[in-house]
Image (cartoon, rainbow, N blue to C red):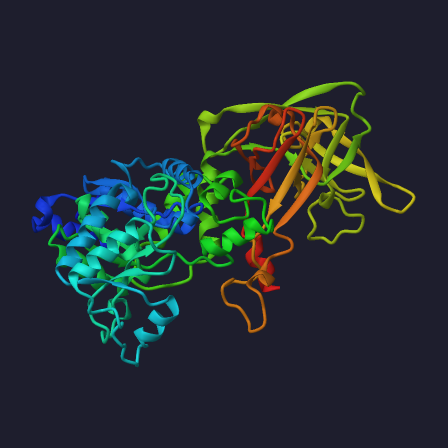
Length: 559
């Protein structure tokens, strides 16, 4: 990420950081953190937060920690920790320190004891339902818990017994004593600790009480010397509680700043619902290329540069909005256009026989690997008597605006010759199965000596040298622009797009792709950008469509 200059317009978060540095706040130091919960795989919404937190540290000469908020043992796993690390590094960032909220469990417990001793916390026996009832509502005053006035000694005893495992899950909780009539519901005696007899992925069975996010988060920030605690807008109402804990404990006070999360059309951002898709096998795992997860996008062929460019384009604001999927695709195309080598591929092959080309002979035609990058060089493609073209590139009866191949019409075969169709061979059902054509050997390179012109240019593959492949065409996972908008009586999964994956077999690729390995990206000319999938084997290549050459999905929505 480029450094800020006087001419650079900073987003409001970076402006706060820049002003703090100018004013000497925090001795001019900048410390941020990215604090995911390891309960699932990161998605593109997290990419925005990663780019912001790590980007601020890079831009202002600061540091950024990767801290796992592992306070919810029943949902967390080392698998997710490792996946998150991989995603952050793939996006191009490296953390100063890798930390866990569980690193601070002993200190958090001591701080909870401190608040009890100061009369600012108490052990409550109310059930979740009773707590909800006593809390009241936005226009309804709350009521004090009947356990709110327990003595300090009794609270200390009960809290230690909670820690020692003497009570069942949900039997007791530790709550902060703040204000049951506050207009901010988060300040109505919020829970600080709950009982969970669950095995923790790092601390094992040492603890059976776990701190709530609101109690653990701010104190973790403080312990790490975080200067700017950047989070999404849903935590704005939690900020007074964040401040209350820190001020009550008298510890280092980071500044919490909230920004609008990413909302993307035709995309589900709820980790809970994405997990449901995985568990119900409606997708093929977290890294299914239709998923908005970072690992899914990586498998689909999206580049980290494209994701970072997208995050830069959408910017950082204080207002929730809906970003068009087309903008993400534009950023992907822009980067792949500059970096992906070109290749010819025929996804729905129709055989062409050049009847006046010598049988058994082959000549090599030269093709530019990437017109946007001279250093990519050229490659050679075999041309012979039998070729494949796309079935859609032939029509028996075509209008004047059709530039493909038809009987008695001449077109250009890219990087080769002018070719004229003389006859279409059909099977017993009337389907065209082969084209008999002739070529003009004087038009090598695509130009005729007599100056005649052709309007159509087709891609092709030598039948004799073609590489067989499976190609997976991915479309948006949801038909609905806002998948979370659910009509009454409907299930959110009703919005799933039945054509989100179309699998094509028997595709024919130019032979230069035979040695492609998983992760390699190409532009299939006139078709789109594709990436070799991890399912590929030595005997069978599998390609994923990353994105089309143009926003065809947007056009289909207007029909």
